[in-house]
Image (spheres, rainbow, N blue to C red):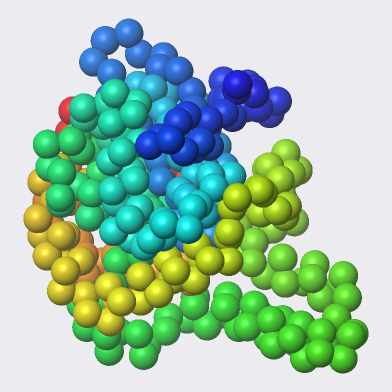
Length: 310
């Protein structure tokens, strides 16, 4: 059963069965009559399919659209046997495409989803027609790159770190309260939005429904820790990821922001220097999830690039 999203009437919230598992998806039917390119959207660490909701209707101009919740995130349950690693999610994304009957597709990935997308495209060049990377969690070429945080990273992450430490300290003596929680939520939203106070209420409600409630069978803490360890392993020794970057055959569009606190612009520029055939845009004063913060720019850039590469 699927439910239409009130504020996004062309988008339905439902599920598909993948390998015997109920998998939550947001989807939209294609508005194209010929030359369809299916669009598969993969969220970032601790995210869900709702992070793509603002661009799903626009992407349907190219073909059917499916945004998927990875196991352990959003509303897709995980099992005791799930590895909840990057490699596990790579295999899962391909299995989702198989279930949908999509032999080839455009693959969009944000943050961790961009890392997953890069590995999928490198391993399955016959399946990925187009690759769109949005602030992808690709490692610096050398672990030394970890030691030089950008100004955006320092400015945005410091309030989050301070509020977390304060919450732990006050929580230990029973004094942490709702005001601190509100400040911390606002700091977290600043990773994505320049003005958290101006975010549409419908979007906030949708995010809260996914991230603010427990979902049966979804062990977010285990998924978060396991995926984080998996990403860290690939970053400590980045040779495999960089080999994948060099191996990608699909036309690739990379999008990022100059104020991204999690994936600094210099990392994106180093990737683009290694792959001058890729198209890249680092937008001024934009952050970690362009499809949420500025969906109009996301769709404009994708539409123009797709028309040139298609």
